[in-house]
Length: 141
Figure 1 (tube, helix red, strand yellow):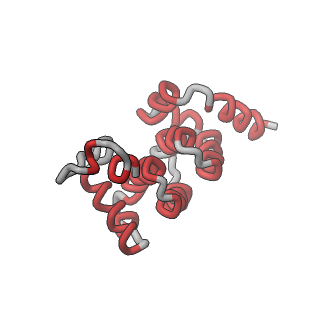
Figure 2 (cartoon, helix red, strand yellow):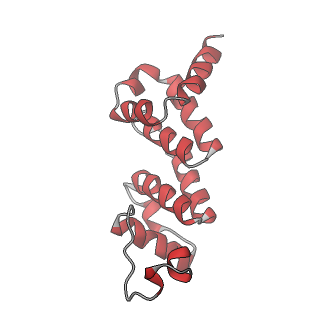
């Protein structure tokens, strides 16, 4: 909003450069703005699309899209995606998604720890370790 309607140079420019959003993700986001749907979420790589769209939706303040992505990620949480998605949930303020990912990680800790996503999670969101430890402790009680 500030770029297009504020006193920034983009207001008078013929084009605006969008950074930090891949072109296909931006296209899906525009599709959502115009149609209130995201067919890309129903494709084979829908979880990966949802991960990228969640970050873009949060950055652009599109709460409806953020919720839609969160639902897709909750339903698609697996050993392979749980750690990466947990980092996203932590970074973008998605408590329900975070809880689901913590549940998946706690139930499959050894397998999740072997993923690249887990390494990213520990590097980007080390404070989430407290939540993981509580969940693992709760499973053993």
